[in-house]
Amino acid sequence: MDQHILLFGATKDIIGSSIYSINDSFKTVGELREHLYKQFPSLEKLNSLMIAVNMNYAEDLLELKAGDEIALIPPVSGG
Image 1 (tube, rainbow, N blue to C red):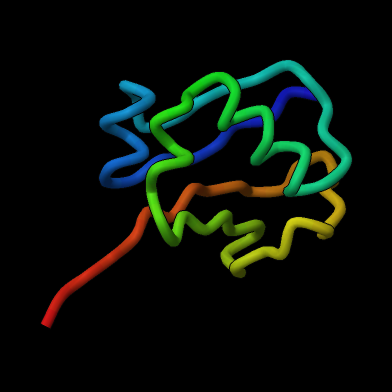
Image 2: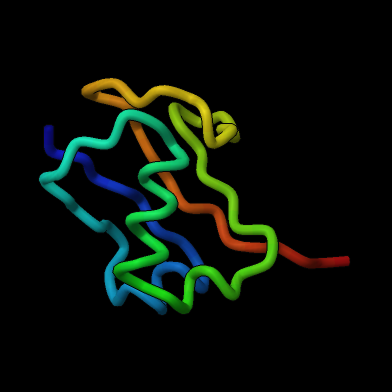
């Protein structure tokens, strides 16, 4: 299953694109997270990196399905 991951902020800078496409199939958000950390070790340094699935923050145990919209949400600060 092709998966396209939307990237923002620091994640976009680390990966070098606004969309990252992979052809592997990952059952859960956690499996996807581990793959991304292996491919891009700098992502692991982002302290509160969140993964959103279908516009909702996702826990690592959430199962992924074909057609899910996936996004990496980097730490955000402001005031």
